[in-house]
Length: 144
Image (cartoon, one colour):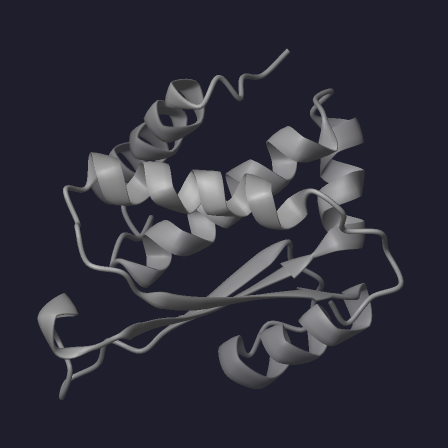
């Protein structure tokens, strides 16, 4: 936690989300994933540095799968997920649901990116967003 925000209960929530993803994806191997809570300033810096986008975002993932390690079988660490807690809190208000729901969504979104899902075109976006809804619904984390 690189912020001053209280994060009690966040670890359990995120662990439950990750476990449900692994269940739905039929993955029975354990992987290391780092989740880092950051400020708006820090996520903007990361976004600018690695994506050439000079603005605040809610979540950024960095997967370790690459040309050399292109299979989940060859790695033990999936990567890093950076979540901006202030942005998460703002979006919870904007979308009229709980901070827990928004955090679960962002963690799910970030984790699916680590597994190779993206939303770069209409079809991949539809697939990824449906998976997100299925995972959150399975955990009974629903929109209001």
